Amino acid sequence: MAAYTETSVAEGIGGGCAVVVRSYQMDNEFAIRDIAYVKKSAQKGILEQVAIKEIIINPNGVLVYKDTFNALHGEDDLITESEAIALAQQFVETTIDGLIENDPCDL
Image (cartoon, rainbow, N blue to C red; front, side, top):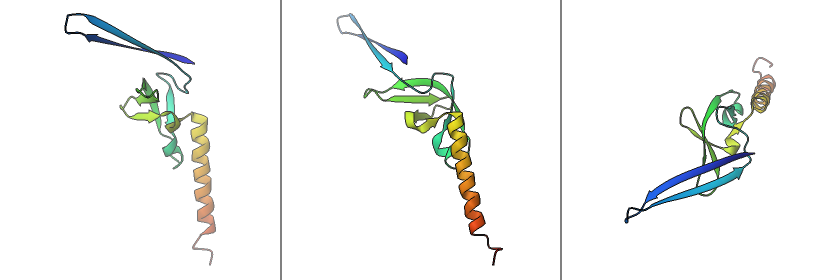
């Protein structure tokens, strides 16, 4: 469980100042500086890893990860290394099975 605090400062017309603090308690899979794998790539047999640079919570309360290339990823878009390896192996096995069944040399 990770806690996040966002602070905003707004200056009023009368020279006053207001501070707005929003705190979120969210359960998330990855933390800043963690290495995650892109699920869509793993499903195609490619192990694409990204480093989490920032965790953003949009106004709707949805958690979004920003990687070091400034790409944004939803919670369901990233997986752990073991999950990525399993998906990539499944893709390779399915592809090899398909090639063996449709081998043009077996006439």
